[in-house]
Amino acid sequence: MFRLGAMFAGIGLTVTLCAGTAAAAAPDSVEALQRALQVIEVELQEFENLPTPGSATPLPLSGTFKEADEASRSVMFELQAAGIMIPEAALKVLRLMPPGPLDVNRPILSDYHAASRALQEAIDFPDQGTESLPPAAGQVSNLKPPVTTSLAPVSSNSDVIAIGAVAVALLGLAIGCFAMWRGRRHDELAVMARTDGLTGLLNRRRFDLDLEAATRRGKSSTAAMMVDIDHFKRFNDSYGHACGDDVLRSVATAIGPQLRRGDIAYRYGGEEFSVLLPGAEDEDARVVAERIRLTIESLPVVDGESVTVSIGVASGAASDLNGVVSAADRALFRAKESGRNCTVVDHQAAPATS
Image (cartoon, rainbow, N blue to C red; front, side):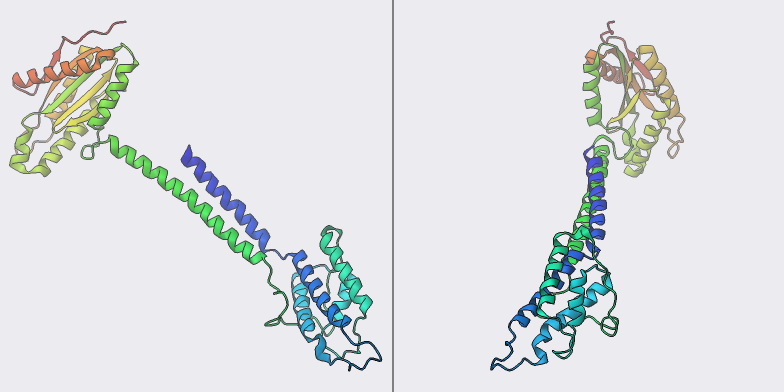
């Protein structure tokens, strides 16, 4: 559940932040209007500092407005490219601000104040709507973005927001992928912990856990089977350990198809295997054991030598399953003493009680 939740959280975070990235990448009309307001206020300040008529101070040269005029071109280019809506009063001032003689079509002081108020209202109440900015003849249509300006930069914070959103979205995706990988790795390790690497059967550790769980469940009859490969050492000594491994795998493969539904086979250790048969009694387990023994006896011979097994069987109450396994082990010992390649049933285990 944790893995699934982390995966969906990562995917959800990615989708959400990608949507935020798209929104952040859209032109921000409020920021653009704020920059236009800044440009107008800078020139308004220059305008208010002009000498009054009749004073001894000479009239300023056309360069007085040079800095604000360059910034005006920047704002005009941005507004034109993005199709930003702008108040008519501000539009009137911005259209007349690009460079030209000071006495030709320059806005007057009241124009600047009206433009400033209109822009501020547009910023404070952006939903009221304003007129779009068409290109001004001879002034806006061929404008190119300036290289530098000493006023606030034209680029907005939306680029930074977009980059940050992409980074966090990628982080969310990475978290989801890591959760999936971690869950898959956890499953792999869990399988490795309970499985014998050579034969693919469940291992001794899992046998002990299942034995304990079955003992706690109740008093129904359960059978246990211990299977040992006869003279296994000779395969390792005569033909090498690779041959011995092949024999172990062949025996493990032969056991599985002979079991009933619900029976579980384990590699108990070395050349020994075990089987738990829930609900089985002596005769049920003996029949299964004989099927296993005959199947293994018919396996292809190894350099003229056949593979056989000895099997011990016992059944009893699940509440005393440790005792049942011990009885099956004793039966296995007697099978070996009886000449091997046979099945022996131990009838001394405690019977199941209803």
